[in-house]
Figure 1 (tube, rainbow, N blue to C red):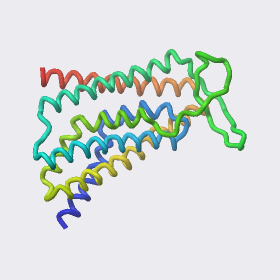
Figure 2 (figure 1 turned 30 degrees about the horizontal axis):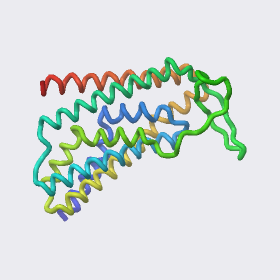
Figure 3 (figure 1 turned 180 degrees about the vertical axis):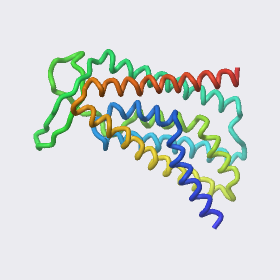
Figure 4 (figure 1 turned 90 degrees about the vertical axis):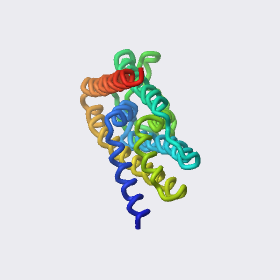
Length: 231
């Protein structure tokens, strides 16, 4: 019964964990370039997979070695996440400002149609190729986020687990919760972006740029607070 309660708590905490501002900001910035709600959800879920993989590695090390991540190292990892958020936000703003992005309808040979965002910076045609089915950038951001402060919460719970097996199982359930939570969140983010892309191209660009600016601000806040704490 104790293990069941631990796993239930892990699942709920994993879903709540997806609501942290830096997580939402980074995934929102990445998924803002998705061509559909489904693709946006894929970005969120893959972020959760990367996040879980890193936690699994850290948690396994904690359980096997019986130690915690040094405070100084944890601070440096958190600082790296802040820098990553600034870079993500800046890249999002750059794509909007300099990419000359616009919206047009596009229909494939099988009759399936969708709204497509693209740039004529290098071409005046409407021919395009769709991005790969697996969002590697979302995976990389998730891996990086798993290294930072969120790991401390999980590792403390893992350290109190009755066995190595139950500790790893807790991480897995926590990760599933974060995957589900982030998938739902990105669906909610992708919906207004999808709707705005259909009729309001200018508003759509403004939303994307706004997400980039918010991500930069959150990243700068993390960088400032961690820099004060460790330097």
